[in-house]
Length: 317
Image (cartoon, rainbow, N blue to C red):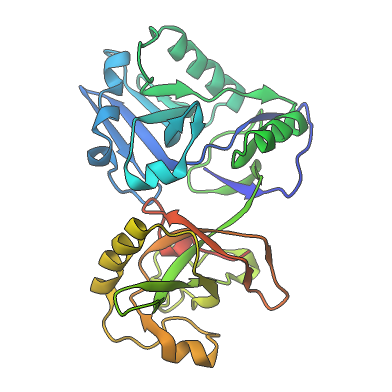
């Protein structure tokens, strides 16, 4: 289930509020002697986080499906940079219970699913080191104060979830609202410019799908293909990289360089000549201050790749 965007925090007795965890969204399937972590685009994340592949041992004999985020916690706060670099320890933050011992809970109100989640964690013995799994706490009705706390702690933001809402997989609903401390957007990497020296990266050339009415391309269509709409240029990101990340990005982008013409429209003429165009397959998260009148990102900064998301999810609403 996906959240719509709310631009301001609010208080409401109809909503449960919680921290928006800055990590990789993952569904956790526990049971039959194994744990499997699956991303939103159906990739198996388990091999990347072997320390999280024994969560089923906390509830022997149970068959569970959880929704949550894989994060790298530093002093209790998620560090997205460490997660990007593959630096643990990693923690699975569970915020929903979708299946319990043969019973689907998708049609059950959120408050009841949260009660079930609390019951599960009530029987787990504390660990001496970093916990491999924790439960995301909720704050009924208290969105404004939680958002203020998130800003003080420099967290990504908060989520507001309607207490009586059922779980609708794949649906972006206003029953779930994300309220961000910073503005971020997921973009497709359509190409890159070279920096000082041939082997260096100057900036990433970014694109999004405009989406008719803010909607994503139709299910089953390929980005840029028939019925899928065209990627539109939205800006360049030339900051936010470490030297190590530049080399990693170049290693991933060069195999996608096939001498292409620009795979997106509305590209400024000078940029067409300066850019190495690549197959638009990689998704990254960009932080920015605002969207200009001509629909360009102002002060875009690279935050990291999003292997848990597909190009079709990069929609400008």
